[in-house]
Length: 131
Image 1: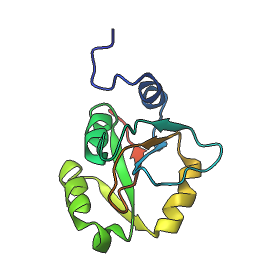
Image 2 (image 1 turned 60 degrees about the vertical axis):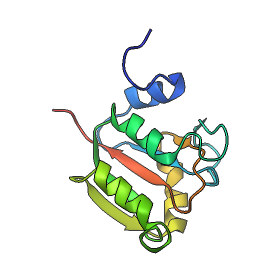
Image 3 (image 1 turned 180 degrees about the vertical axis):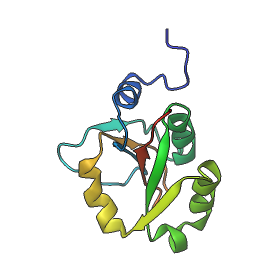
């Protein structure tokens, strides 16, 4: 049995297959996922699992060099923004319009759906290198 923290087989496979500068997205329960983008649906019920729990889990195995967030998170969900920045204090942040973030999901290896029910709780992680 796998010993590391990501035990969801689909998510673990996606992370293991990522290379430098590849994208993985994590988001709230309402984020529309483009056709053709793999959706790893972890949502069980409202707020379970939370966006933060899933993000922390993914970060335990994925090196991240840059993140993309919706510009709207600054005013519509500053608590979530602060929590993200606390987890990734030294990572470059790019803010884009929410409409652009939704379009960019088509470029990600997968979208991980959480049970999060707060606005603009969506992120694109750009993988870094471990050396």
